[in-house]
Image (cartoon, rainbow, N blue to C red):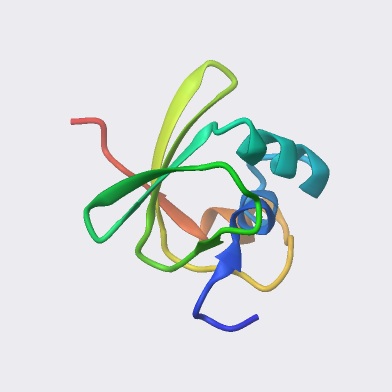
Length: 93
């Protein structure tokens, strides 16, 4: 995988926010993810959309609003410690 971009459904799965790629695909297709790149916010509706390092994502999962910045794209779905290194949570304050 190049550093240029990664599919949003693959990234959500690698970062362990969703259990399977098919669940991640359905989650994105519902329009549940907002992407901010270069100050422009877009609601993602296709799982093939690319995300890049430095992009911000906002989505609700399990009754919580998650706001994060992508720090790495990853190369596999690794253990939780490896998955946590893929993003940085934005401080709510």
